[in-house]
Length: 422
Image (cartoon, rainbow, N blue to C red; front, side):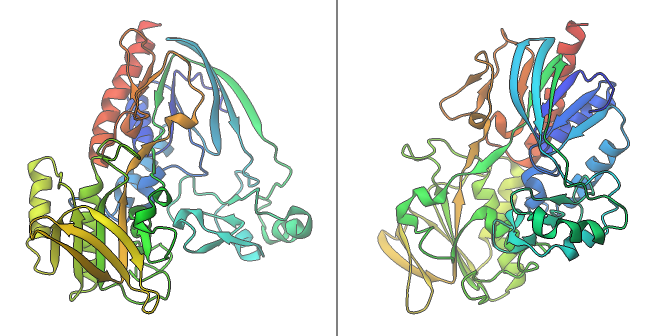
């Protein structure tokens, strides 16, 4: 860690966390960002485009990365996790552990270590749909621009010397050990983000029975130029062009047996992904099965109408009863109720995309007992217990725009706590 005295701790380096950190630092306060991944950017870095403008997320992330790089008031710790929080507003003691990167600051991102590395493992950035080396950079614009060695995949004893010899900058250090810090902070912002609901828990949707039934997060990677297929939307099973695609809404959301709440962004995410397919395949046929379409705000409503007016897109109001694979063709059969037509239907498609809900990750943290978590796993801020605040999907399911807007408020609350404790 640096020698600066940090006043605000931001837990999570996704779009909410880095936006909060930049706002607070540019107002004159020292901030530390703790991120468990080897890079900042969170789930936004894995997206293909934002809705409704359909622009790539790299633009917004790159600007924020530059603001972080040029601001000496921001310290960021990657591969790090908060182990314990104690104390009270204005005087928190926080224990952070940081896993070794095995590559030091001499790294110039030349990629020689990855070229020399003989070990390949499933690429978690691409949700296992491609492979990567044990020495890797998650994606081209990753921040920090520094390679990392996967400690679980690296075969240090058998190939470590070859890796070290390949790096002419002496950046490989396989002797690195985990580090632990106990630091005082005056205020804490939880920007822990979200994870997709586990689609395998819904037996009727057939997620584990076919490679051609995927979650919406996987669709983002399929459509991305830096994804497993370089942006070509195909069936994972055989590489066939996906020209008939079904989108199944509320896959786990608004269901008392799974996620009882609406995840807020799934409808818009699917509408966005429909445009991916239609742009790539002008003759593609799209089916979207929904309970209710929720697109709050006039801009989002216009986006819905644009997609709805496409003659190749069919929106079907009705609950999906079953999704399964036709073993003879590899096609996916979606069985559903068409409420408007008053009948049950079966639709064969090349690819089925499940709009899985957003699940809070706060439950994975060790939080002080004063921090209140509601029945859905999101933080409830208590005005009687100031000092710890939530932003983005640690607070509620929300899209990128609302997360960034909320970051300004979170930064202001954290600053107010710092000022009160001065």
